Length: 255
Ligand code: HEC
Ligand code: HEC
Image (tube, rainbow, N blue to C red):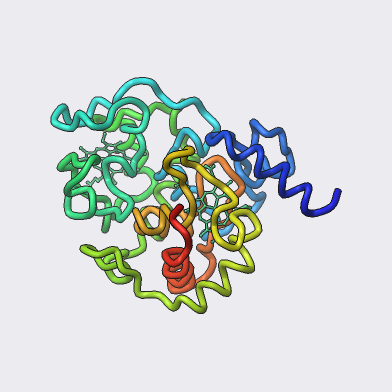
């Protein structure tokens, strides 16, 4: 099949939004997305943990829970249902909870961050099974709790050193970011970041849209990938490479 028609087929599938690699029945992707290497490196484990932190159910191809998490504060009526069970919803994309960007806005909960958490895998699993978390083994199995613990121990980038907390401005080299983006990200997102759209007709969601609205979220995804799809992760490279890409993506069209 010529390359162009392949791209058209992929793009068409993505337009619907939440389709995962499994929905699309592309088994060659499914192993990358949901499987694990026979001998996994620490970098890979950190990224799997990072995607679980982002969205544990999409990362495992599970249904989104219907109920609001019991620890979600009643004071926040803006969010409810399954989204409130994602680690990031309480602890933040910058891992700082109430001390970070979620100190205000639609995800305000007053809950502390996870930056600097020092528990090992056993301690973290116990923490996740107990109150206030209450994740069962069916929700987050033991090996997945381990990936999250590796992520918490090795994967929490200090975003305050590279993204301006108040303005969202990014301390990155745009030219270098463009070089990386054009040779990697563009294979799926297009050169201008608009080949995939997770928004709707009125409010499109492109790489440029997201990078300007929430650079903390986009840096997390650049470093760890996006749950349930075959997106790459730049974790094996220096943080600065991801920061450069982030700086470039903020120059891309938002509409
Ligand atoms: C609905 C909100 C909520 C969600 C979702 C949530 N947590 Fe928590 N988490 C809490 C609360 C509450 C605490 C206690 C800290 C506090 O009181 O501010 C906590 C504490 C923690 C701590 C710190 C413990 C310590 O002693 O420093 C870690 C680590 C943690 N959570 C990891 C996770 C992980 C991993 C996930 C996802 C699998 C997750 N949390 C999902 C609410 C949540
Ligand atoms: C192999 C394909 C692929 C590559 C390469 C790739 N992505 Fe993605 N990316 C995806 C898919 C698929 C989605 C999910 C889109 C959706 O939900 O419709 C996604 C989602 C995203 C999202 C946000 C989604 C959201 O819901 O907030 C961002 C931001 C993003 N990618 C940025 C990047 C950047 C930057 C790079 C390069 C470092 C990159 N991607 C490389 C496939 C890819």
